[in-house]
Image (cartoon, rainbow, N blue to C red; front, side, top):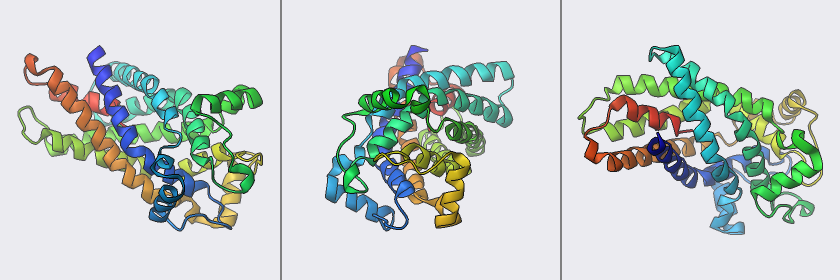
Length: 301
């Protein structure tokens, strides 16, 4: 159990290191002012951040997801495993239900973590007033928000996070289960790792596509208030204003960056988990394929 948990954490860390620059670009594109856009698109955003803020600019806010990683993986491991045991049969539907349950419960950690990440990623953008650094790091960010707005403040965006994470994890587990069955993941298969990498990457893409519009609203709500100005009264008002100002395309803002991130993040996570477990258990003989799939599933997204 401890070894599996460690493997999941290492895989998650690798995924964050690979995917965070794409996430920073996604957030910047999602929340930029459409009337005074700073970036023309995904690649222009990448270039602008590196040119103006160096490569470190792409990793703004990485402390928050790194801190929350252990807790999120622990929740996902425990909830998904227990849910599958209670549901009994390993079927695609049960994979969806177990994944959705895990996604819903881990929102308790995920929401404050992503709030700090989003606020840190937005530092140094916008008008001159907001260019000064408000937060030293992710912990300082959450403490300042808590001191100013209380528990409600650090849970800003919880409803949208719940709406996003619940089906996202469900579709991830469902897609991964279907793909690994179709690809014929079997013991002794010399292509088991590429198959798991492909299945994980495609499942990550499928899960993001299923809930992306909600993620746009979540990012806007969590970034609202940076610089001292609040634009939105709530979810419905955010949707209404966004639609009025930018049309339906607003719900695809940053999608290219997100999909570019989804595959390598999940692929890296799977490779790390797989290679670590194989190395640590090489004296125990070949690994059970179902067990390997469970570890890779629980540590992704």
